[in-house]
Image 1 (tube, rainbow, N blue to C red):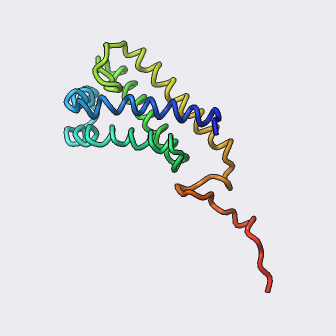
Image 2 (image 1 turned 60 degrees about the horizontal axis):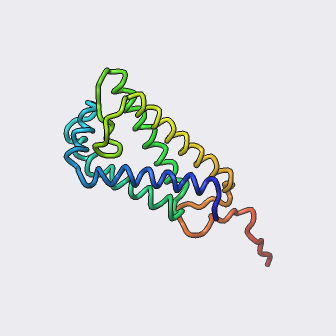
Image 3 (image 1 turned 45 degrees about the vertical axis):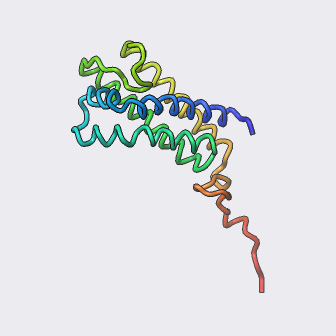
Length: 159
């Protein structure tokens, strides 16, 4: 089914996949980018470099396959908000960092990175809002193939 919510989830999945691939292929460059933010100790920089790209891939798969869609959208938006906060923090501290988002691409201004991440977060929040609107609470799934049964709709048995 093609809906605006589904289209937004596909766009987010493409963004996360495009961001993950260069990080997986060049962990040394990604390590420099993460360390450049000066937010994490070395052990957490290494942990982030090893796990973040694979989390991005996993979220992209979940969004495309529509498995655990609600939790996947929540984590997607949480990551986008963390990315935006990290960029904002670097900007406020006067750091000139390569965002590390899509590998070593042509250098862009911090303002561009911030605007782009606000757009990404807006897409994510819109996808989550549309998903909730299209899937009322009784019809939403909890990471399962079948919707959660509403106890009010269960047939009553009389003996």
